[in-house]
Image 1 (cartoon, one colour):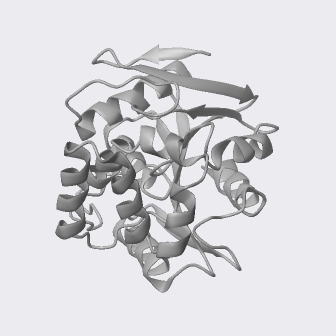
Image 2 (image 1 turned 90 degrees about the vertical axis):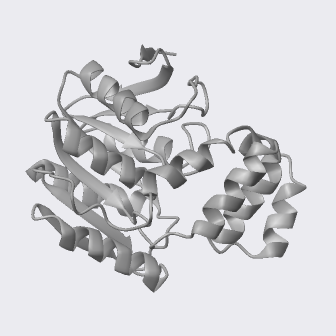
Length: 253
């Protein structure tokens, strides 16, 4: 598996497929290459693009280096853009959108940005404090359950997942929940960022209005951004619904 070394020595694992302009796929919370939407999406994009899917630090086959800082994750992504030839398009899911925005503001090699439902929802200090308390006590399973409850997954569903065989994999990357929480900050759209690259913010027509409103707010905050809503899609967007929108936007970026 190819890796790159970030500025602080963290090894970032990635995979590359296809041919054409480079696209880097950025996961949201609790996802990585082996567990999330990006491999199916990459399979649909690789006929027209060179697609890079990677494990964010602390996930999958990437390593981690303490202490965490948002700037370190930006450096990880910039190192991957450099490995892709210095210019790349970014496609981010959910809270990965916060990382994409910060990187687009820092790296002139970002040629275009597509975000799917970045959850700038004004934040919850109570959730943030409890999450860090649980992680600090080594209660990773409880931290995952707290996150799931926070994003609206019903209690019985969470209980069923905790007894399932895949929950251990979620516990293993639970510390990265604090990373996404720090990336989102106070939950307000980071209007102070200067982004010149073309941007498309996408939402699902069947998603909660809070997420749809957040997507519109992000699009409204940046002069280069537009907004698109995909009929019938939820936060768990289908790759086959998202890929055509990405192809059309990136073809113009």
